[in-house]
Length: 141
Image (cartoon, rainbow, N blue to C red; front, top):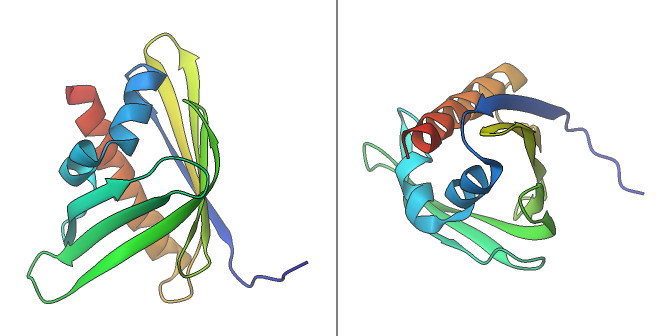
């Protein structure tokens, strides 16, 4: 059994949309490039092979153009319209839950291992900002 010094962080948001719509917007590369980002960075291209063993690849760039990098994760578990788990190339894991709580309302819950390069508060704040942007995008569709 491995030992990790990293702590898990969980964020969530109720999104006023059916679970299938939330799932689609979260996984469709054409949608991902429209919602995934913050004030400082954006995803300028995405590809997604949504199957166990498949890869999510996001080409990310800092908005001032000073830095570009690829975020790559390999899917380890998928349950249609319910659950996605992946392991990033840096070894950190993430879990995304799609919970239909009422007709047309989905709780989206994300749990991820905190990295050691930022404080947990910084990471929680950044990921919550992305989640808020995602929710707004889905609700406008």
